[in-house]
Amino acid sequence: MLESPRMPNVTELWKSHWGRLLALRRPEGGFPYFENGPASVEPTIHAVLAGLSGTVDPTELVASLDWLATVVKSDGSVTGSPAAPVEGAWLTAPYALVMTKAGRTAQAAAALAFLERFASITVQNTNQSELDGSLVGWPWTDGAFSWVEPTAWGVLAFEAAGKRDAPRAVEGRSLLLDRQIPSGGWNYGSKKSFGKELIPFPDTTAYALMALAGHVPAETLQNSIGFLERDAEAQESPYSLALSLLALDLCESGAISHIRSRLAERFDLMTGERLNAVHLGLALQALGNRRVIRE
Amino acid sequence: MNRRSFLKWTLAAAGAVGLGAVIGRYWHRRCRVWVLSAPDYRKEYAKDIGSIMLREELALKGKNVLIKPNFVECHPGRPINTEPSLIAQVADACFRLGAASVTVGEAPGHRRDPWFSIYNRTLREALPTQVRCIDLNHGELVRIPNKGWYTGLDAFYVAAPLARADVVISMPKMKTHHWMGVTLSMKNLFGNLPGIVYGWPKNVLHFRGIPHSIVDLALTMPPHFIVVDGIVGMEGDGPILGTPKQMGVLVLGTDPLAVDATAARMMGFDPALIPYMSLALPHLPGMLDDMNDYPAEHPRRFASTFSCIDSFKPWQCGNYWK
Image (cartoon, rainbow over all chains, first blue to last red; front, side, top):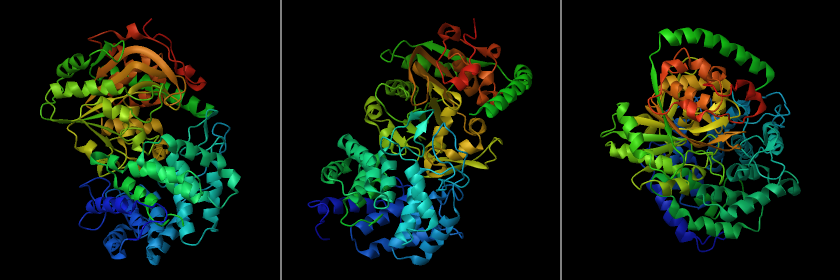
């Protein structure tokens, strides 16, 4: 592997933690959330994305991509786990994205066709939440309302497939903008509750910024970028730091060098019951030498 | 909740209470609810809690225990979560009674990032090293057929460590809730369900009806024992944005509705007007105060009135026992 231009001196760190991630892989090719658990869709997606970000030998990823192809349903969707065949269809968006990035175009196209149909319900606008309930985004599961993370993934999946101007992607971006907390950042999907502004979260803010960066005037996102930069100063969570780094890198923030160092110091927190393969996969993506979720 | 649904629920609750009162009086068994004076978090409660577990014949010897607190996000100064030192005392009581293992697990609906909740340093540092803290939002899933029918869901999915635990101890925080009036042991069951299936928040349960979901969950996966942290509760715009309410009490028992109805009365609410309690009344014992026994303190000693958002003020009854 070449020295990472995005993060000098982390190549050895990256390699060693990539090895830790690979050690979690199940014999059938998928990755579990936690050590010795069953192969699951989300950790497998993030492991493959991590591999793509680090320019590992593509043959190392084939078994995992093949396993992902075995859990896809006839309608092109995937769910959280083969054990839960109905709920959790939100994962179809990151699945579409990883299949696009891995060049598995037939599976990506089927997943995107599902995402065209998979839509959140709408609700009447009320003064209570001050959001536009008529906008359609993506829900976590069928028959539910739209939320920031699944909508951001939907937008990113269409963008990865070169369909950034698809009507669903455009509406998804409008929805995300509508849900932005005026003072900066995003909560899960609402900006106010009973008249009070909600607290922004780093993970949802990072996903929304990844979906919106470059598509809306920069000043529209300044408060949210500022929130993420400030939050990262004291952030302990490697998961939130990884997502913040991925988003702020896209937003060309001046804070990313410092955040990279803080994240690199926190890899060792992800051990034992706190070693979630999604978190490790995201941290590797954040320190990898190539942008993958959005280039 | 808008005015129409509020009126609908009030009428439904009144009807259910009328029918349920008859059912409850002649059909349901009596329940015991243990109310302990607990002035602050520094005192030792493990022995008393262990004694009550024994009196309730909670068999822990050689068992794998999962403690399910309400631990959803950390904000200094806000009593959102079950107090870590109290969780540690319950874990201690379990070990004293011979538990083989004790795990603390939570699937917060407010935060996907477990470093804000179950991995949080304040919790980890309060617990003995042999107690594991696990994230129930992610990981292996187990399907459990729904024993209720209100949601129309065939089954619920839970994380494997919860499904495989021999004994589950629910440790809710005594709080107001801006959708349900109060949140106690039965609402705490939402935190059994993994976000990877139900999302953040668990919106599908909201659309199926929060009271319906609570009752189906209570019928499907009732905890074996409950310890409500009412030492410092939350009033006002709970369960996140409210303010501390000093109560100085623990409420314990094995019957979720009995514990919740008693705690709700102590908070100044009429349980008959709380939708999930009135819906549960025909199914679970413990709703009627005169069918409950209070072998320790009587709850009237701690009767108070929690401030709440305007919508729920009509559900409050002042001091129930005056």
